[in-house]
Length: 147
Image 1 (cartoon, rainbow, N blue to C red):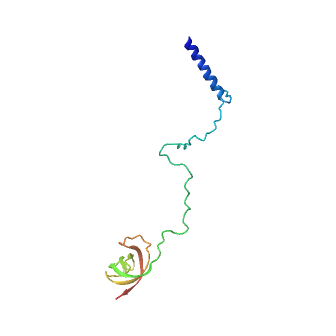
Image 2 (tube, rainbow, N blue to C red):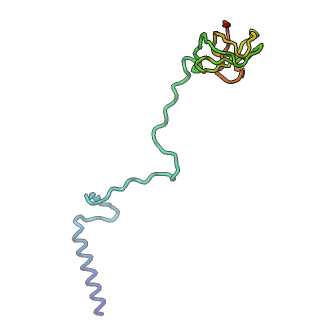
């Protein structure tokens, strides 16, 4: 019986000292606010959702809308001088300028041009999508031949 009385006495002393140290009395069902201490470490909040979920945030902005002017306009090269690299009776020809720029020319005129001819041609952006070979696709207008 001696061990039981010592255990009971020790339990009452421990419980009595703990309730005396708590400071504020707490009734069952109520919570007590806890003040943060300076020594507590800050923990970053865990991400919500699975590891590979789509990030949250502001939605991406919408495009401004339909452009006011066409965006695929190619500036007109104008009059270009060079050497014919693909000749014949048409409708496709090849021209390389003295700067090394290659043009794939198209003309419905049926002009006869021979490979190696030195010409000056008025070129405009090609309106038809015809494959005339390597080079910038252009339509050929008026031409001048040089001897």
